[in-house]
Length: 360
View 1 (cartoon, one colour):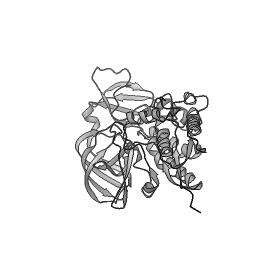
View 2 (cartoon, rainbow, N blue to C red):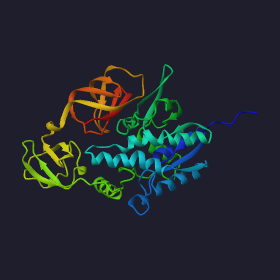
View 3 (cartoon, rainbow, N blue to C red):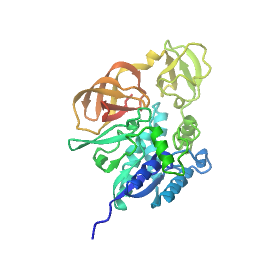
View 4 (cartoon, rainbow, N blue to C red):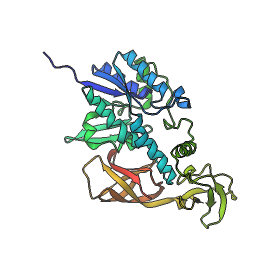
């Protein structure tokens, strides 16, 4: 008797990208099972009306896609894990004057750990997602690389996935552009083919990060950052603010009514003094930075010449990197704004070598 076809689990967010990835696999003859994560209780919020990754409406959209494709569908409740690894980290980072990246944390702790475990529990040997990135095999080694669509590339968010799981993950959309994916979704007749993209963080559907942090801190009995001064580079008070968690390094908009018409940027955040310092953009930039909690997706090195990217839409900058344990010192070829807490990803060409978080 021939052995059954191996199971492939398609992680479905409810959006068109993951749906198209699943549909392409079904079309190719794979034995596909759809799996959606329930991550955040969004009942009574804007997220419940849809358009947010893994919100209630999105779970139903994923269910409809699986029904259309004729494949099994599972909903996995990972709300507890998500709250601890992603939401708590997000809140604590802002309270500490840092700039978190919850999508990176989700990929590190949720999508490629407990979700992959659940996939294996039902007999799957491969997990497929709709990310715009590529996993390439070079000389017997699996490598994470950029997707071909530079405007949609998501490799920056994926550096923290476990390196040993690369052989068990597939990104079918990595070789396609967004326009091509939309065209494939329409060709395949997917029920969510015209669904708009989600632009906000799934658990902050209205985009009010500061309000969310405030509400979460009060709920947990945490002391909230108090109001303080906005000061210029000469120490002169230019205005007042309602909490340092409302600011991030390099921010220009939303500084309030300052006593100057100069174009200013946030250059430093002092949580102990509740002080936000502002000045010209150059004062917020630096050419040297430290990366903490360094994680490798390639063979670790002590010194390397590479490029470093510190924002999702940021341009990779040539850099010399010196590694010391789980930290790395970086000297950039040109200055940039790198906020503490942001992801800093090290590339060799299009390949992700390693990454971590910008240290204070």
